[in-house]
Length: 304
Ligand SMILES: [Zn+2]
Ligand SMILES: [Zn+2]
Image (cartoon, rainbow, N blue to C red):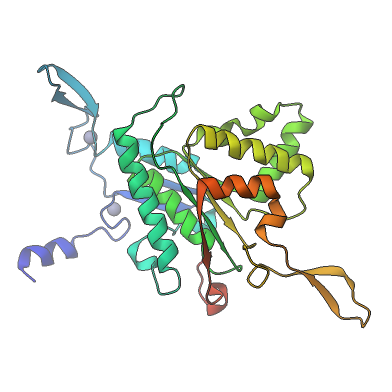
C-alpha cells in the first residue's frame, strides 16, 4: 500500500464513510438522512453558489445544480420522503450485505436498480408522458420471516434515492390497507387514495398478503398495480407467502382438528392476493424466493 492510499483510508469519515450523508433512526417512525458534519460549509465545489455553469452545444452558459451539495440535498429529501422504517436505517444494499444465502436476490436487486437508473437517463419522461420502451421489471421477493427480504428492499430504497436520485416509496402492506380504509372513510376517491403510490417512481410493498384482505381492498390494490403497469413504473414486493405450499408461510388456525391438534393453513401468494393481482405481478416482476436461516435468531441486533 503506498503512503497516499494509506493516508486516504485513515482520513475516511467514520460517520459517513465519505458519502457526506448519514442515516439515523429518528424519534418518528421513519429513518432520516442528513448531511454529515464533515460536509464542508460552504460547499468546496461551488463555493456556496449551489450551481455550476456549463456550456451547451451552442456554446451558451447553462446552470446545473452542483453535484456535491444541491444534488445530494435533493437525494436526501428523496430518502426522507421514502418512509423507510427506523429499524432499517442501516440498510444500504452494501456489498457487505451479500452472502451465500441472498446472493441471487442481492444480484437481482442491484442489477434492476442500476439498469433502471441508466435507462431512465436515456429516456427522459415528464408527469404527462410516462417512459416507454424501458425495462421497468421489478422483483417479488418471497420467503420465510427473518430471511432478510425487507432488509434488502430497504437497502434498495437507499440505493434508489441516495445513489441514483430516483423517488421511491416504501409501503408496508398493512399500513397500505389502513390508508385505503381511512381514505374511504373520509370519502376520498380510489384514485385520490393511491395518488402518492402512483407518484413515486419506484414503489416497494412490504409484506404483501399479510392480514385479512377484503375483496374491496384487493380491488384498490389491483387498480394501483395496473396503473403503475400502464405508466411503466417498477414495483417491488416482499412476501412471506411463496408460490409453493411447501415453502409458503404456515399459519395456525383458531380451530383444532378432531384429535385436538393445531390446524395449519398454507396459502400460496397466488391464493392470497387473487388471480388478477398475481398475474399482473407476473407480468411486471421477476420472482425470487429467499431461503436459509432466520437471521433474527442469530443474536443479531439488526432487523431483517
Ligand atoms: Zn462524514
Ligand atoms: Zn456545491
